[in-house]
Length: 107
Length: 107
DNA sequence: TAGTTATATAACCAAATGGTTAAGTGAGGG
DNA sequence: CCCTCACTTAACCATTTGGTTATATAACTA
Image 1 (cartoon, chains in turn green, blue, orange, purple):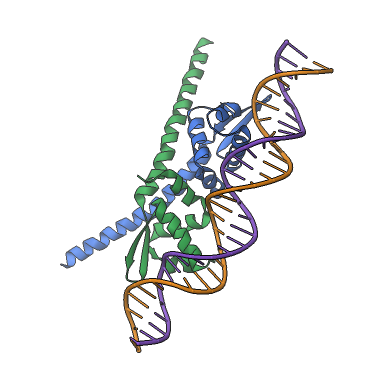
Image 2 (spheres, chains in turn red, brown, purple, green):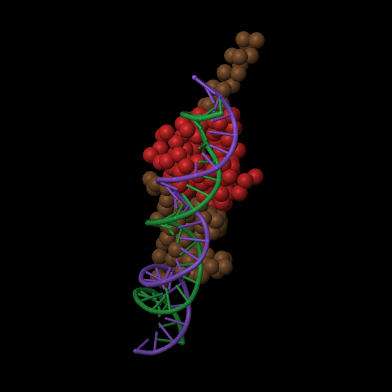
């Protein structure tokens, strides 16, 4: 289980989210990714490393080419965190509803 | 619709995520939040402002007390983004499966 | 009115971030 | 054996970030 700090930190940058969006569609090489952004290739390499250490990106090296793809499991962890929070706040809303109904009955 | 840059940026900080976790359970005043962290009150105020401008936090001011709560809609936008990506990558997985089945038949 | 309470704002600082250019590494191809 | 190609690493820089202390503001309270 990777830690959410790194995952949310990785997703905080718009360039990295756009990389994730592209990789979700299909795996790409480092060069292909770099070609799609108005940044230098080392800048892209840095972003990829951030995504990789967060667990969001997986890399398969074949000769001198690096194939990158997203990790569905890690994306799922982000979903899980939010869903976890939702359980609490919908619980709170439900309790509020019950409270309102009680007041209704009192009238 | 708030922009995801600010939302993901807000969630990138562990302190702010812990604030969100508490607010998901129930609304709290600024002072109550500050009391739960080993940070000074101005530091908390800064975090709250970041959460607020991202749209994740809503504030209702009553006299000198500020009541804070999370915005379910904004949380939902984060979910939507990830679900949107998932549609693509599961599509890719499906296409991969089809491809593998084709190869299977060829044998 | 004077004092306290809840919170925000200002000014400042160290560390992290996101970018650059230049140089390094190592796999393929003539 | 070179040269190129795909990519990383290093060194550097400006800006942003997350914290601090000190001060301000505005609402209650005695």
